[in-house]
Length: 436
Image (cartoon, rainbow, N blue to C red):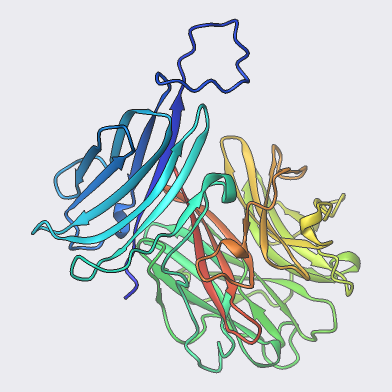
């Protein structure tokens, strides 16, 4: 088993300036410049045999600084070092069992800079019997903006049945009173897909509800006979509504269908699609459903045969009858990294702002970008896109896509589909950003 033990490390320099006539933009590090180092422990995934965590800071010319945390008795989940002089320090973290043996360890150099916020994630690896090679997985905030790929990826793989012969993907995760539900697609022969369900108490360890799909393509001659792929799910007034993707003929227009359920397991399809492809959205994929005041917003990806993917919006007053937004598409590719095609938006509404994660679509399919909006219709892309790429994944994946963006009590997560190399199977992974 690939155990890991993760820490998020926050370095925040506190600079005290006594002379206001100095140019504040010019670095002026002195011995009075100091900072705070806070180690935020991911207790959710701590191995059962870990009882105490001890952190050491060392640097030539300074006395060693040691701090510790007892996971069983201490109420906090943080180790904090205060008044640390600026400069490069060596950080070593040991995780001990009840006998005082070091069972997990890791170390790295960290640099405290004037007025700069740096996030470092350090994963401790097993030492065996207290000895062995130390493997470090470290992500600096200046690279992926605090997003850290989960060390135990992938979190879900195929069973190898006819329903997921080529892997699993196209993930949509929701939270309800019973924990987490993940709806995802199994990829089969001839482009056919099936919808599966997995459940989890923590959103990291998943159990399939069944090796059989919960939603199948339609009978021969129906509009979704060729494909039935997982789509976004809305739970409201005791009813689950899934807006799924399907088609009869891969070369014809693709469509969005609606299926409803009272338990999230047994689904009833509406007989006709709610939207069908046309013009620029000839091939159409639903990826996000939101309730905005008294209206429903359904976000989707559309592209014609030239694969110039764009993002569109449909609006409904009841969640059943839909109209395309009059000024579609609401987002088009215009940044270099997007390679002329974007899609698959996933959105969180928080503090009056709509926050969108989207991807480069075809042909790159290897990075996520961020955009924000005050109304869910007019969007501004971040100038520092992309914020997470396939190169930053634990397994150095070739492609990533189909983001499902959620917020938990302690972190943000992006569940995504990963593809390791040409000819590999699709798998489901997650990257995380801790709330500090």
